Structures are given as structure tokens and as C-alpha cells.
Image (cartoon, rainbow, N blue to C red; front, side):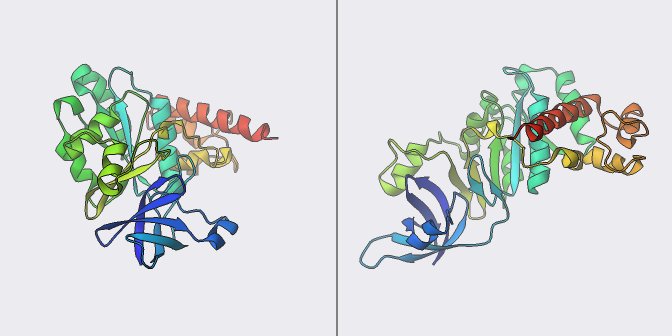
Length: 293
């Protein structure tokens, strides 16, 4: 049989297949070969004879992508939640997450939440920066149920993960999308009569037959050290376009003269905040590379 892992409770994987839920473990050979499935994986599994809805995972099907922290596979859309106030917008984190989404080939969507707490000018300033790059932006107020239908529409047919700083309203958005309080215990206990004292950190919720949403506690703490400093500019869309005008091969786009990216910055084609964040992220990755031993 084939199905999709929606949760991992200790060493037990919860699989959805043919509108049924199975509990499965992995075959010993897979453990020896260090082939460990994660939430989001599509897998093949065998039912255990004389056991109701019990199985053994035998194969992990090819992945579209794999995120190490938190461990999740096959995410197609990354929903980046930024609050207008309480807390204030963290555009450095947003730019890091956008670079990560580009690197992982996930489509990012930016949600500006808590619009009721900010001014129109604040919202428009952020919209201007990211819309001119080509990113899709939604404006919501989750507590007031404003903009929720637009978010549901953006999620259709995708496997989406929500990311953002603590307090930006991810949980409130999820509750509004599903029109109920989503708790890990509630979902698990409904299907498996379990849920208390679980150690899982990632849960896939199904909105409809083709739409999954990942609740990923701690997602905002990920780093992007998988990206080499010399390649970072490639994952800033507008920097990548301007790089062709650099005079030198191997330009870092920071100190060099005759840099196409710096020229585009001077001409107003690149937002200053984006370039400054690129430099901060570049220097952080470069420092990590130089001190990895």
C-alpha cells in the first residue's frame, strides 16, 4: 500500500492512506541503512496480518525536498507570517526565509498579519519592497477573521508550512483557517485514541483531499548554512538579475567596485533593506564557513 506520513509519535508513524489512518513502524533493514522517513513522506507499507490498521514501512518514495530542521519532506509552499505590530516586522528573518524557500524550490507567500494594529503606511512600505520583487503578499487580521478566505485559496492543492517569529499569529491563523482550535492532542486522540505526552514536533493537517498544512513548532529557528556564501545572491531574486552586470567573476557584491548589484542598488532597483540584510546573512554564513572546524 501507499500513503503519506502525517505524524511521528516516538517510533510510530501515523500514515493516511485510502481515507484511513494506520500506525506503522519502519522495517529493520531501513534502520540499518539509515533510511529514516519523516512527516510529509510518501511511503510504501505492508499491513501486518491479523492487526487492525497496523503496518510496516518498506520504502520511502522520491522526495520533492527535505528540510532538516524541523524534519519534514515534500513541502511545496512556505507561508511566511510577519506581524505589523507586537512583535514588529522582522525583515531580516523574512529575507533569510525567502532565500531558504528559493534554495529549496518552495513557493513563498508572505502574510502580513495583525493589520488592525498597524498603519496603512507601514503595510504599504513592506508591500512595496516585496511586491516589486514578485512575491505574493496577503494582508490579514486573524483574530478579526479578515483575509482568511484569501489564505485558504492560496493553500489549495499544496503542502504548506507556516513559518515566522513567536507571537506573529501562526496559531491564530491556523485556527481561523480550520474554523476550530487545532491542538496536537485533539487531532491524534480523534484518530488513534492517543495524544498526551507525545514528542512529535511536526504535524500535517489535511484541509481537503489535496491540501495539507504543516504545523511546525520552532520552524523560525532554522539556519541556512546549507547555502554557500558565494551563492547566496542567487537566492535573492533581484540580486540574481543584477549580477550579470558585475565586472568580475566571483564578485561578493559587497566590497568590489564595478558591481552590478551595487549599481542597481544606487539606481533604486534594489531596496536598501534587502541589500543590507543580504550583507548580514552573507557575513554570518561566511563566518560559519571559516570557523566550521
